[in-house]
Image 1: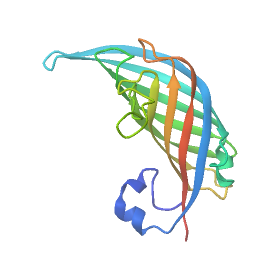
Image 2: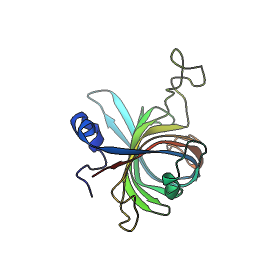
Image 3: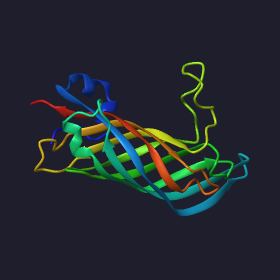
Length: 193
């Protein structure tokens, strides 16, 4: 395995210095969000309340042509986001939040990594984009997925997944539950030796 961890491409010098091979990754996502826990916290000295929730995401990933490469077909299959923890503004699960979780990806190969981003925000809004979201869009989870292929029998062993995810779900007072649909768009990144 090479010297870069799943997040190693955040270092400009390491990214610029590596001799890389890139393959497109494009997945359609369907699945379910399962609530596990919820608790409220207060910070009286700052006048804020936060709702923290625990969830599990069970997702099925299918190839999205024409943007999914032949190499990325091995990553179609099941993706589980475990230990998914979110924190929401004003103690309400329908408000803006931040989330993070661990990823276990099981397709023709196995990959693990991290999932982190923001919830209930609309980044695809005016003035930069056509008005398809509002700034406080509910039922949206988006962020960055970084994972490493751990299957030593695969030619992709040690390759990284660096991708953006966008999910739509049913918002609730406890942060959401039920059916999930979405997309994962990014790259498989490997080093040439």
